[in-house]
Image 1 (cartoon, helix red, strand yellow):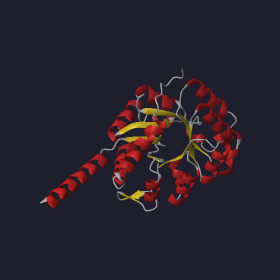
Image 2 (tube, rainbow, N blue to C red; image 1 turned 90 degrees about the horizontal axis):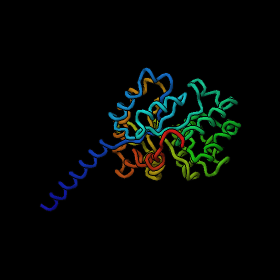
Image 3 (tube, one colour; image 1 turned 135 degrees about the vertical axis):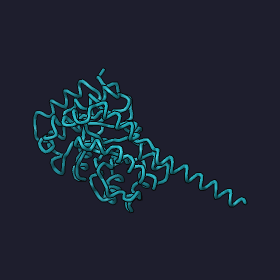
Length: 276
């Protein structure tokens, strides 16, 4: 009889854990609301999508940065702003060599508060170009994270320029989990978002290699949807559902950290919007 009661208790606990995993709130650390999305998915519709998805807070950048401001004006308690050094999506490949970018970024930083600079695209030796070096300096000056869509080489160069830089590695660099673990061991102020990275989970299960990475560094990963085109906003709810499925394959404390606790801790500081 005692064993039967213990078994019932265990089953109840497992059921509770699964239910909680299905209901995990989410901090989405990688979203965009660029100029081509504003009429397709108006700001209030974006906020409704986030609520339906169970996304409690979202770090958003946009090209240009007015999109982020529009969302912040509608939902200041949900939207965490980051400054993107692009005035349009077409500048992804040109911004690092465009001398007009830095005054644009400096002007925005003087007017509003942000949590990060990014997401920006930079690879290899281009991370040593004057524009990127200045972005690293500005992040240090304003106490901001660098949200870097880059290869491992560029991330290393960020830290060479500022050993205390705080870097969020977009898409975990699309790297193998072994390389990600190596980088995380080397740089204590490196974190990884999992946006658009499908190799870490399939069929509701965490892939080998990534499981070890999540268990070794449960405090260093955050979720992301990457709404890089307007159409991606219509996948936010499904992406949140899929994320909860594979998170349920992890220990509950690790799942909570990746789902929202890490994002809250890193990027969840209060922001008033307009710079005081």
